Length: 118
Image (cartoon, rainbow, N blue to C red; front, side, top):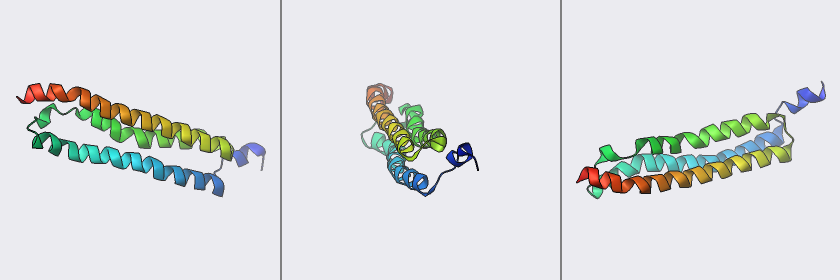
């Protein structure tokens, strides 16, 4: 087997790193699912129109964690263990930043929902 062929495979260490980071990415995905499910009820409880909810922002929050994890998994397939862990860490940083941006965008659009709902 050549050196290139061995680098293309995930060994037990690579799978362990991927599994540990999968848990972290799954937590961000769980937060996005929670926002997607609970935010409409929160809007209704304060008298805001659910139709004015920025659904596209919530969909972005749902799609970012699995897409970034998949990209990190794919990009890291030929890297050594330390580089693979660093790629997953950078991806997780991107997910965390975008998740905060999604929360900020929702707060930005909330006054628009209030004017539409009244």
